[in-house]
Length: 349
Image 1 (spheres, rainbow, N blue to C red):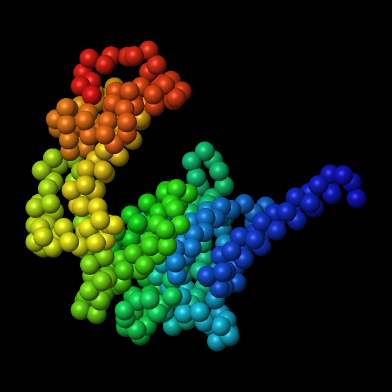
Image 2 (cartoon, rainbow, N blue to C red):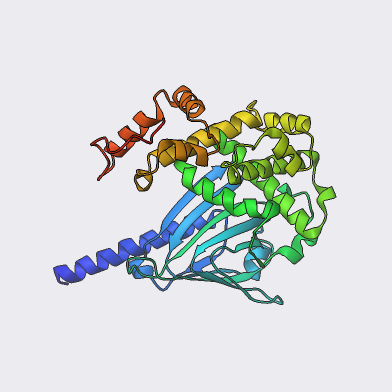
């Protein structure tokens, strides 16, 4: 055997090991037979987080197939639901005695481990001429955590959903936010996020079935608070976004809003949470090189703080320096940043 042939065999062996490792990690909560035509040149990314009884998965991989057979179901059924948000590529699902369907980017799918399925994951080209990839985020959780029996949920399984409003729209937002912030979450936060997500899924599924009475008061309260947070994030630009406006948009009293929000937010009030989100958005915008030409007071107004003096005081109290100093430091660290003190005349920060 030549040195070149040896190198090729070793490279293929390592590639096969990468596939086996990725397959085994997926199978910890998604027990199935996985295969790929790219075994000898396999490359994948996988992020896996334990959120209490819930498991989060974020992955990117080439074309692959996943089969869960009737024999596997009979041999071992962990009674787990698999929720997946497609980001890139597509999923073709086939199940015995059920209609086939295809999930495309933006779709949410829900499967369970109690029935066989054959899932084909087909990649699409990425920017930069890379080979086709599949990208998806998922959550796996015990079916026993949902307030409804499996037979009632059966009509909702094995379908694609395109959430655009209501509680359903919070599902993709939650997954995308979790994926972005995964590395910065502490153990205490991670443990709380699993039950919160299950509550959101419970609220969404019962709405689909028009069975919201089946939700526990605690689940309804958590889902309501998540709806409030999403509403606030969408309307941070509005300086009139007061607790009264937020309560009216959700058809509840201001006192009830204060009580449930504080209980679900570790004592933080809805007004304090809104103010913190505004300042965090402004903090990010000031450090964005693409916004270097936008005056500070304009960015502040876009975050719902129209008075420059109020913004400067609040920003300094939160971050220990003025908005102007934060912007200068952040852009000085950015290649091509404005380290020459470019026009600041309009910056009233």
